[in-house]
Image 1 (tube, helix red, strand yellow):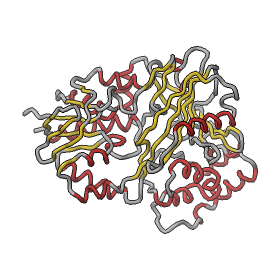
Image 2 (spheres, one colour; image 1 turned 135 degrees about the vertical axis):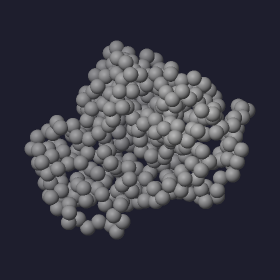
Image 3 (cartoon, rainbow, N blue to C red; image 1 turned 60 degrees about the vertical axis):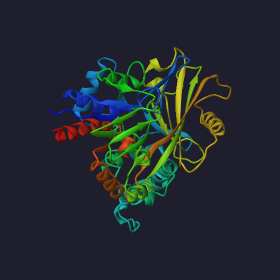
Image 4 (cartoon, one colour; image 1 turned 90 degrees about the vertical axis):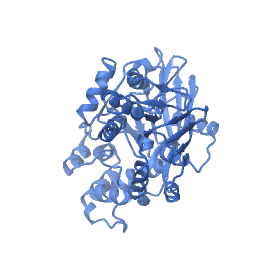
Length: 435
């Protein structure tokens, strides 16, 4: 086979997976990463004996292939967990999912939710049948929509739900039957519905153990290498450090809008389309606490506006190795639109105050570590014109031998498994043209 030069931008999970799978076919790639460390958001920090991931990262598997691959890479450094999560509502912890644990709610709320579900087919919805808001009403009825689905998702997305499409939902939100509803109205439902009913996590080293396992199989990874310009006509990449590289195929895992920004010779209509893309940013505060057994839960959801975070989690419950003996850790997540500036110090104080209000930490708690991550690209917002926009952008990029893949390159809601599989699929696409 004639040799082709394949460059990958970004040494996150998608980029590493693509390089790994191409190598399986005997094809070497070159990976350039702008940060000093590889992994993208799939990284871990070691601070004062604690290990914190860049926000919560858990492994879920829908395919046997990804499950086998991760097991092969991590060996015995992997443990399966049965989900233990809840929703803090009405000043108490309610088992998750909300819709299958109505027994824990006040009777008036429980009855509204049941009646709403029974009448859901009669709900009058908005004109656009593909909106997330309509889907909520049609799927769960007015009661569950009013008490949980709408307030939680409004708090999380910070974007009109009637302007969000349903293209991301498949498998992510637990559905229910009338049997599930009745069962959960009478007593705690332990069926662990949803894609995250159980999960896997490394026993040691945090989530970056997976990234390091991938990278150990790959050559030619260069850090401190930020691409600042790509000439489409000459297929040439210019880097901030002065390096210049030509390519035959370019695989980009950097955020899609960042890629388009550095393209030279891009069609103006593609630039205009990229400006319509929406996303959420995430402020992540990690705390190391000088007390053991901070919580029994893996993570907790917060639908009420009076609490600044939408979710918190407890890394020491994923693996005891993530906190020193006798201590605990907690990560918190606050979403915000990138158009809004945040005061990190003020937000940190608000988070800690709210953790005290709900009793997670005590008034005079000894907080050993405060670590923050301001994640510019947190979650993609699926607008109603999402599919149309991406279809046109990707068609243009592919015509120039550029494949934009992964959670942010592919501009989608994606799990770590999805990123691994994206890398594999992209490698197969390259192989099909590698002649």
